[in-house]
Every structure is written in C-alpha cells, then in structure tokens.
Image 1 (cartoon, one colour):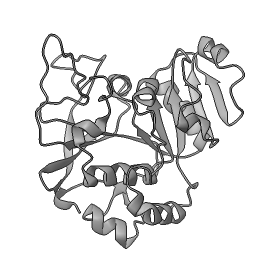
Image 2 (image 1 turned 90 degrees about the horizontal axis):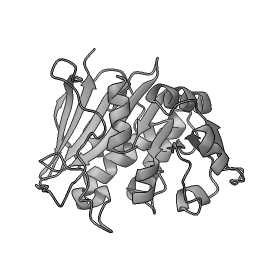
Image 3 (image 1 turned 120 degrees about the vertical axis):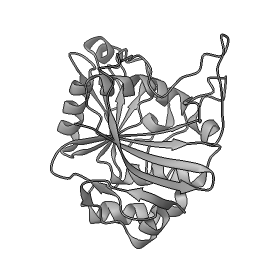
Image 4 (image 1 turned 90 degrees about the vertical axis):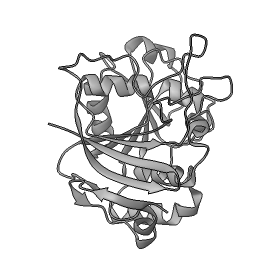
Length: 268
C-alpha cells in the first residue's frame, strides 16, 4: 500500500507480521530502551489540520479518508503502549475509540498479532488530558467500559467525582508534557507513547522538547484561511524564535497515490 522512498529511522525493528510489513512498505523501528514519544497528524499542503467548520472539524475531512493514512494511524496505535488524547480531540472525534482496528478494520488481525508478539495488552491504554475535567462521560470511548486514564487538575478531579470505576482519574499539579508523560508511563509501565492530542497538546510537547518523532501525512489539497476562517495549524499555543525552533531530521519518506508520508525525528 505504501512505497518507501527513504528510510533512515533508528531503533529496533518491531515484530511486524508479513501482512503489516507489506502494507507499510518495510519495517517500523522504535528505540525500546527508553521512553519514546511520537505523534501522528495529517495536514493539507499549506499546513492546516482542520477545516474548523461545524460538523467538519475531523482530520478525516483533511485526509478524505485515504486508506493508507488510516492504516498508518492503526499501525502506530498497535505499536503504542498508550495513546494520549486531548479533550478537544475527544470532542471533535466523538465516535472515535482510539483502538488500532477502528481506523483500519481490514488489518485488525495483523494489529492483534503485532501486539501479542510485543507482549503488549490487547489494546493501548487510552489517556485523556483535560485540565478542566469538562468531559462528556457518555462519549463512546469513555462509556465503553475499557480502562481509560483521565489526567486533570485537582479542580478537574472534583468535577469528575463519581465517574465510573473504569475511568481512573489522576490529578496532576500541572498538565505539562513532563507531568503527562510521567503519569502515562506510571500507568502503563510501557515506553512507546503515541500522542493524538491535537495541535495545542503538540505545542506543549514541542515546547518542553518531549516529542521524539512526528509522523506527518501530507494530503494533496490546499485548504487556506482568512479573517473569517481561522483554521488550526499543526502546532497551536507555541511560537518559537528563530534560534529556539525545534529542529528535526528526515527519518523516512513514503508515498501512496498522491499522499506523502513523512517521519521526522527530533534532532538532539
């Protein structure tokens, strides 16, 4: 499904079943000896990640549901010990379940086989970040009954008092990237952390130099913005000076049709 043009990624090869390796166009590597944080986004050519229109805020409107993009999303979830989701993303993707098979059911068997080979749980732990605790607990991902960790503040924890027992509420001193990661690793005991938290949460991770890899799908369309259509970019809430902007190296380039799949690794 994906054709690999460049691969100079570091780390240990994950035990991908042949079906996943063929679809991905090669191996997927991650460091396994330390906590490794990676993000996955799809953007337009001009860097927009959401149309920000009523009923059309989801990333699928940017990607147009491209199968290869949905497969990569599922594969990265299958590789992760935990998936960190921001409250805004949870509201926008109300029907989302944050499991590997949801975006790409055709590879459900391969995703399950990968997790067994990695001696991982059946699905990655879902971690929701909400400073206010203002969450709709009837959202399918929270109401399903699978374990979910909600990271919030003390005030948010009070607001969520009485939540169902499968929702573990943890009050943090501050919802910084460092605190989020520490709590997530404590909860999972794992080291591969995927953030699908949205542009604002990504800004937190970049500001604190906590993001190791960015998987970025470039969709072949230009969305644009104007004074009346203020659309979200890849990073929100963080602006860097020229000498402070985080730098990356290009770790891999893949294509599928007219879509470009990039992986950037943090330059240390």
